[in-house]
Length: 275
Image 1 (cartoon, rainbow, N blue to C red):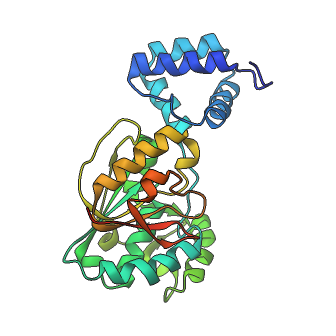
Image 2 (image 1 turned 135 degrees about the vertical axis):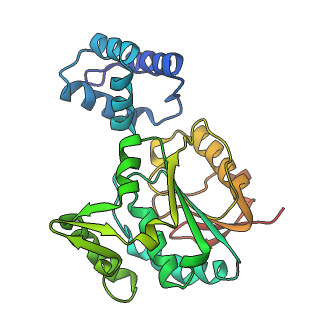
């Protein structure tokens, strides 16, 4: 079926199979509507026909990496949805403060804004020295930007209002070094984080965490993949660890709901029920 986008469902399935066969990356459990929109955007921007796109994906590894980055890019900002961070500060951080060491996983971290937001939150709560945050994504260009920790002043000005709404003391720029038209996150925050490639589709557990944050990612996944990823998160959490998903996503499976206690229903913050 062609919905007027210039790409049929059959072509999308053919492309998904091709990418999996040639590059081992499985898009089959991604939301079809979202995937189609992004593929069509790539074809339009590059003035490509479907045949041209297939040819480039098979014969040009650099193009495939660019294609993957374009398809998987997520919109992000620092302290996005301030109420989410207020909920963490009130309902999760006090519990985390009882741990000797705190490991946090920000899954689908994009260009690092959420990781650094969490780092600031933990630091302000006095947990900076005993916490470490792992930021993961499949988008290599976004991870490079995250590792640099440098953002334009225009972005920082936009993020500053979010920061104020969280109720944290001072201003967002207190955590950055300002240089001309850009701002660099302070080293004490950067040193407590690590950014690496990890695919929620195909990769497995790589550590045990006291808190996992994954927001605005599940909306791109079909139901079956969402459940697989939730199992991964459950198995990656320490006993009584927290899964934080935000207002746009939730645990919908009755089977998986039994494995978590709801801490905040609006912000979809859950605590793992001990085995």
